[in-house]
Image 1 (spheres, helix red, strand yellow):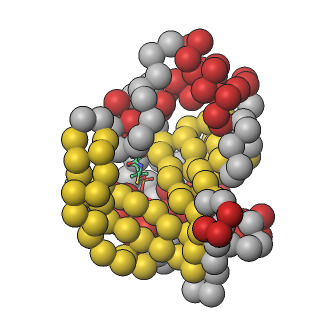
Image 2: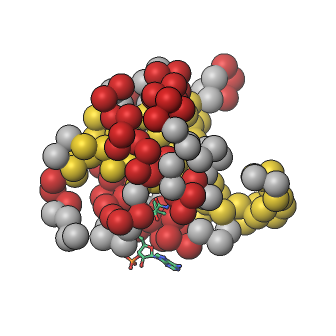
Length: 170
Ligand SMILES: CC(C)(COP(=O)(O)OP(=O)(O)OC[C@H]1O[C@@H](n2cnc3c(N)ncnc32)[C@H](O)[C@@H]1OP(=O)(O)O)[C@@H](O)C(=O)NCCC(=O)NCCS
């Protein structure tokens, strides 16, 4: 299914996204590369929307025709570290490889710096094996800063991560 990138929109999550959320947050191909636990029931998806997605400081649903096909999140640090924030994203596998997330990241970056005016640094961590995510960040203008060896405990494994950043001055 070929998607016209201009039809992609970003909006806050709603409880009515519950079925659509399951198509990616319930898919291990997607959650494998995220800290998220794979959702297995509609009830879990509803609770996740209500308790995590909707109150999140900056999480947007990636939509086609207002239906959620994925997410992009930016989590600002607090206190003395509030100059920086962590970004993550994912979409349903049937949409991979069409430039969608690259376009979404390019759209989201100025919105994030507008909505979080004290932010100086937007950072993203990709698993070293997640070449698609690294490519997205490079295409969206993030700077690769280096490889963090044996950095993250994730789903039973300690893995290497590649760190990228985009500064408010970039
Ligand atoms: C990673 C992910 C977000 C990419 O989204 P997408 O919309 O398919 O990305 P795009 O189409 O914009 O760009 C993908 C790029 O990666 C490249 N790519 C894909 N798989 C690759 C691989 N195994 N090795 C090298 N490059 C690869 C594509 O060719 C494309 O680059 P190109 O335009 O230069 O050809 C998507 O695969 C996903 O949701 N994965 C699961 C969740 C996830 O990994 N989130 C990121 C956590 S850091």
